[in-house]
Amino acid sequence: MVIRAVSLILVMIISTSCTSRSTRSQTRQSHDSQRLFTANGHQFQPLIAHDDDDRARGLQYRQPPADGLILLFPRSSRQSIWMPNCPVDLEGWIIDDRGTLLEILELPAEPEQSTTESLFQYHARLPRHRAINSSRIVWEFKAGTAAGLDLHPGQTIDGDWSSVLQMDRQFSAAQ
Image (cartoon, rainbow, N blue to C red; front, side, top):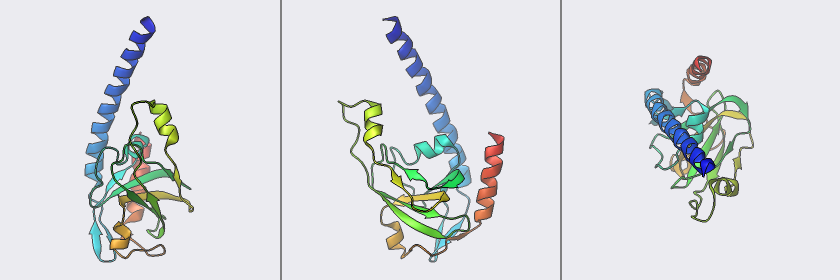
């Protein structure tokens, strides 16, 4: 009984912590949406997720914003994306530090967690979508966005990428 009570208290503390991080993340993401990018004549002001919490939250439980969400990672590597609690099919644009679109990952929505599986089981069954190319930047959109823009790997997305990457370094240093 004591173990259950302690477990319940820990869950409540963790839940409260996650809620406050989520609120902070939403505020920072909204502030960072002032960055302007252009692809095939279309302008975008995406949200930018800088830290582990923002990236892990991604687009869970919500529709993707029209201008997408940039997941900005601290190091260039073959990023791996998964889709917990994401209600719609997405695509992930893998972009180098100069704005070149390297590849487009298809990120299909996954069935929700069933009442018979634990959170661990749910997360374990979700496929990971791994990029072929190393990058720090994954830009998530609703599936079909690149096709609708006639955007293909090899094309450049114009914008001040160096400023975004520098802003990330400043943000990371402040953590």
